[in-house]
Length: 369
Image 1 (cartoon, rainbow, N blue to C red):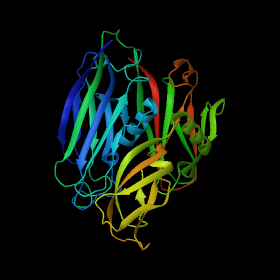
Image 2 (image 1 turned 180 degrees about the vertical axis):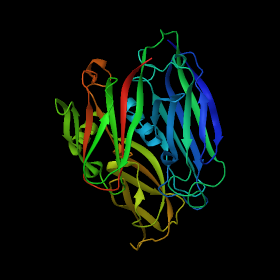
Image 3 (image 1 turned 60 degrees about the vertical axis):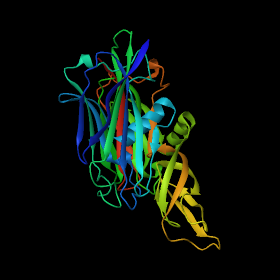
Image 4 (image 1 turned 135 degrees about the vertical axis):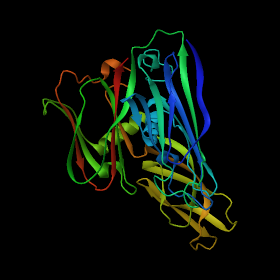
């Protein structure tokens, strides 16, 4: 097999609320798409506001048909689950600093999978679309992302040559998004294609994923077959054992005991050190859990320091962006995956335990070409 990188665009300037569009007119199989987005922080700071938030949707479409659709947080989490390695994430809250997130959208079980890849020629007009909203968390300005056209997007197709044309790819889509309340939430899923895995995102700063949704049940034909009926707390432990922990560099701007948003939801560990702070100011950690931490910033006599300072950290944990992967069998063995076509109805039943959290359900299925 011969491989090459097809650069679709390099650091193309994107407006604050623009949707980038690019025809996928390549004739060879695409094993993955690499997307990199960077943007400059406002002059003062940009607290708890990440590139992951402002890329609200990445899609592959063919006219009105959606062939794949994820937001950046979901893409970053799927990258980790697929490759076993963290994407290149560099969150920063520093005034004037540049944030840069790079992620790989896989169409196969791994990069250069010879059996599963996307072939644009099987569709009339396949396109990549990436939607931005710089003000998704906070308005652009001195304490958000900087005003002006400073979003830069790079897109690269990882193309394979000298292979038979693929007959299928892994189609990854957000199927549902809702705000949690209480009681059961029932969501019907399609029974058209084989499922490789589900990815759940249960996010609310200050809550663990299992405190938001306590149980997940997967039922077919009204309990004729129940392949999954588990506590989220146990599914999370299972995911940690299978996928492991991740780590990243995180530049914070905070004062003593200020709550700082983290990218890892579960068991975060944060190692801090000073960066351009007064020599008589020291830093440590008060606590870290549930997608947040509180730095300890103090003077040599132990007095709390109430002025924001630049802190660099090594953040480590699991449940990136408060996500939970639930695979069907071994991820690299198609025979293990779940075929729903013998059934007429498939439902997820989620037990809600905390209100006002963002809940998203992503499916990954085998899509014939």
